Length: 252
Image (tube, rainbow, N blue to C red; front, side):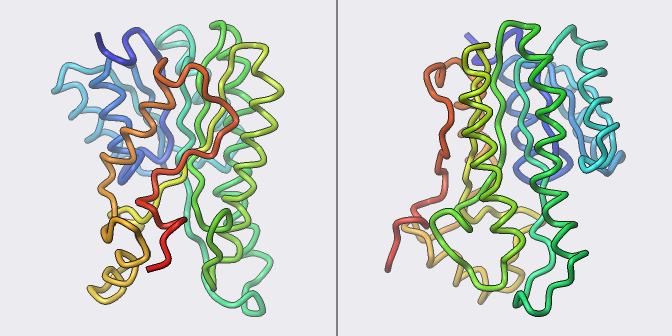
């Protein structure tokens, strides 16, 4: 039986990388999916690929920092499919890097808005829709940076992603009685278009940080998202789930 048969999902940041791989996997496992990102053309290509594989998907482009867009995504999923069971709030950005003394307030706010405020806005509208269905699974993409590892030059990124773990814990406690599970997924280095390793040397350095001595491909992280979305994790909530290749524990 398909892991997400008869489930309805929203995936943000779906135009590339982890979000794209997850949207395709969710559809392969039986979910009807609303895919969200800023780039309409890339979303349209994704929808076509899902439909070619006999899946069901609808795209809505927009900015996850916009509250009206967060509401529109939920309105669309209810209109098209009748409700919401799963939300993978994956959209995010590294933001401006550098010493804190060189970061502007605007840089700081942009990163927090993209990574943390967008998750708040998503949950604000997704949780009530899940409660209407009797429960659901809410997932945020966080990171080991700022949780188990401090990486110089990533102040705003670390702060915003660490904030997601606090958001996860509070929402899990608040809405567990309503049947809503809330978890954070913490990937390690992943080979995506947004990856910070742009040269062979920087890639080798990042790979060496991991116990597995490599970085992930997006499909590996998508499988962890599938676990959190599915009934396989029915007693899992409030967690920070590592899919980080051992970067958090490695010292070699």
